[in-house]
Every structure is written in structure tokens, then in C-alpha cells.
Length: 632
Image 1 (cartoon, rainbow, N blue to C red):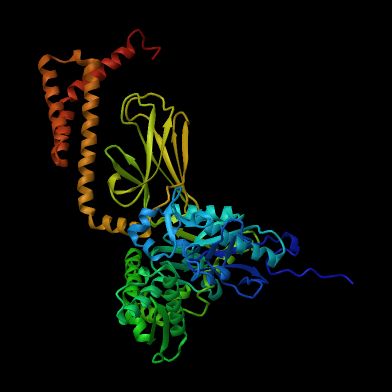
Image 2 (image 1 turned 120 degrees about the vertical axis):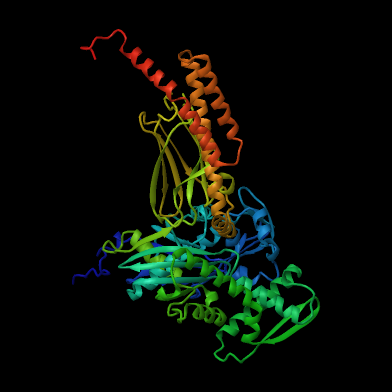
């Protein structure tokens, strides 16, 4: 009797031709791996049936077997061995220690953060470990889980990142995946992944807000869903705000209420971990209560004394009100960026385990004046969306029409003369994208061009972030302004940047893959955006002055070269007048008045017009000398 090959709709009947691709939500407090099986995206469980993997790694002394514990085993040891048990490592990804200290992150961690190569590292009994190494341990565990489930190697993975991760943090995530033996098909923003899960399940269209409050990061994105196209209109967030902060706020409130003169972060590492674990338990218990008047007992040992207090929803709301308001402030900023009124938002998608807290859901419902969507598991929705995208990128759904249109958070450009920024890719540009602009040389005979790639919204390079520098050499010597150099910025689907420069006449080219130094925080991004708005008029004036100075310098240099070559065409008085105008233009360059500088430059241009005409006549005469009309 013949066997029938049964396949999922739109897929090959040959199971061996199907590529196994997974979606991974690499979270601050826990991580998940999901895949499309039997036509449906689902999270993959471990041997005990648990789909969640705590994002915790414990390192053991050299020679121990095993050398490390990952997930639930590590989490269980957090109270007794806090110095070697690494949690919330996502907060350290792509960051330098000095940045983490400035943000107050280091003081909140139970382990020791030190300076490492390119980014901060964690000191453990097994040596210093970078956030990339720790994340790689978590990713490798999820990879093994998926391979065991399907009994085959993985084709690749789609990994989610917070929407406001910069290039450095995205690159660090890719490095961790590579270290874990994964092929990254694409990095996608967590809110976009959630929109995929909701949008495809419900075939919904319209404008949606995705409110993503995880254990350690907060993101909010405004998306337009139209016939399978997911377009991110604006995005923002706070990478130092999450459920962990709610735990600390609750613990601090309980300590303060009992008269303890310390905060949770000031306790010894072991006690701190125990108090925060109890705060997390109480938070979760309160979130699960249907009756808002019920209370949950907080009980912990602090400095040799027993601390007990019965807490209600109202107590929790009061202790964490400032944190909830911080998330709503970010929501308002993103709504302004998207140029939308809250009445235009069709639905609000809640993502992240921390959105189970009633205080958060109530605050979001009050702001948007509608109940948020919570019909998908907030812990799993991001991984499910990533799995759907991975399945398509692997070629298992050739009929799929899914299209992702993410955006870049800050403008990209290059430095021009005078320390000005010429923006080539504006912020909130949809990616992937490629944009180009033509530039030229400033000096006669210039054979090389130094390019400085920057990121930010201000007009002066000093106020923006430097990403990379490279040089274009081999430009043929020409008069200033004659060369044509096309600079192209290419941002791929992962949000990573390549910059190339090509001289159009000779074809000589240089390029660089921008792998930025790790370290731009979400707070810095937000501050850069706020600075650009607050100083817009000042920046315009400063830019006008710099541009006027550059033009004056160019005019003076060109006139000086002309005098050296053809000064004999002028009388002594004519030459003296032109030199006086040059001195006036050079003196004006020291002023901080764009109009005065431009006036001096125009006076020099007008005063040298007759000289320029005589030079032109001489050039024509020299070109015609010795030729008859027939040759010409």
C-alpha cells in the first residue's frame, strides 16, 4: 500500500526540503525559542515542558563539572551566589562601564561590572565574562533545545532586539549569536515581531501602538499595518526600565515603610537578591489576584531582623507610580514623532511579562482611552512573531506576503568643511535603504578625501556621535570643485550600516562596514533628539555662520591662486584693491555674523569680476594660438 506525502499548505511535500528556522526572543529576564510547526507558530518547551528559559548564567570555579549553569538552575543559585550568577545581562550589551555607572545601572546589580574590551564585562570566579559571552550561553541553550525538538540542524534564526537598540547593541547581539553557532537570518525589533503575531492572526489593518515592558527594557512603537506590510512610523523607549525596576521600587517602599534607612541596592549581595526575589514574588501574586482589595504578605530577613508587611494593589501602585509615568512619557514622545493623535490608534498591543501588572494595563487603557489587546501570551508573542518571520525567510512560505519596514532611530551623515553635518539618511527612514549624495573637493589638486561618518540630529559634528572614519585616495588632481564623489549609505535589514565613496570620473572607490564602538545608550539617543528640538534655531544660526566662513575661505583661496598665476594682468592699484577686499573677507571670517561674512565674500567676488574676465580671455587666446580656423 502506497504512503501519501502530506504537507502543510504552500509548502513542499518533501519534508527533507523544509528548512528549520526559529525565532528567538533574547530577553532581559527570560528568553524563548519558537518555530512554525504544523502551520502554526509555537514556543518550544524544554524536557520539563517549560517554554521560558530564565536569562541567567552562573559560572562555577575552574575544574568544576559542569563549568556553568544556565536558566532555572542558575536562577535557583542567585540568592546564595550572586557574584557569579549573571542576570539582566541585556542591559550591559554594547555598553561601556562608564556609561552604565552614569545611568546608575551598575549600583543596581549584585555582581561586579568591570571595564572590558570594547564594552563592560562581569567579574566571575571563572574570569571576566563579556555580555556577548553570557548571551551566547543563553542562545546556545535555546539552539540545542530547537535542534533536539526537530532532530536536525537549524537553517537559521530571527533574533529580536529592542526597537531602540543602536548599531553597537545590534552588532553585539549578532556577535553573541555567531558565538552560539547560530546563523542570523535577520534581527527584527521586538514591537515589530509582536505586530506580526497579532496582525497575521487577526488580519487587522490600521495604526497600532505596541507597548513592550519586559524585565529590563521598555519599548513603544507606532506601526501601520496594511495588507501584510508592517511599517514602523516611530519608535522610542528606555533600556533602563523594566519589571526589575518595579521589584526594586516595591522593595524600597517596604524597607522605607518599616523604617529601614537603606535601599535594596545598599544591602549585602545575598540579602539584596533575597529581598528582590521576594518583591518579585509579591508583584506576581498581586498581579494574579482578581480582587483588588486582597493583600499579599511580603516576608524577608534583613540585617538579622524579620521584615513582614501585607501589601495591596494600592500599595504597589503607589510604590511604582513614578515608573509607570516614565513609560507614558515615552509613549507621548513617540506619538509626537509619529504626528498622531491617540484617537487615531486602532489598538494597543501589550508585550512583555511586566504588562500583566494591573497598574500598567490600567494606565495604558486610560491614556489611549481603550482596553489594550492581551489575548496573546505577552511572554510569548515576540518569539511567535519572530518564528513566523524566520519561517518565511527560510523559504518555507514562498506565497507569503509579509513585509517588514523598520526604521532607523537617528539620522546618519558625514562631516563637511567647517565641522558641519550633511545628513544623508534622515531618522525614521524605513530600512533596508540606500541613499547617496554627491560631494566635491575643497582645494585645488586635492587627491584624497577624508570621510567622517556621524549619527545624530544636530548641525555640528561636535554635537553628534562619531561612527567611523575612512579615506578615499587616488582622486585625480583637479581644480577645487571639479571632482565628483558620490557617497552612498546602505542600511541593511538588521539596521547595520555600510558607507562607500566613489569618484565618478575614474571609478576609484573606498568603503567601510561601520562596526561602531559599543556604547550609545537609549538615554543618549533620547537626549540627542531633545537637544535637536531645543536648539534648532541656535543650530541653524551656527550652521549659517560656518557655511559663510567656508565660502569666504574658498573665495579667498581661489583669488590668491589667481593672483599668483595671472597677477600681471592687473595694475598696481587694481591689485591693491583686490588684496584689500581679500583682507576684509579674511577679517570677516572671525566674526559670528553670517550676513557680514557673506557681504564681505560678495564684495570680493564683485571686485574681482574684471580680473576673472581678463584671465578667461588670456586662457582662450592661449588655447587658440598656433591654430587655424579649419583645425578648430
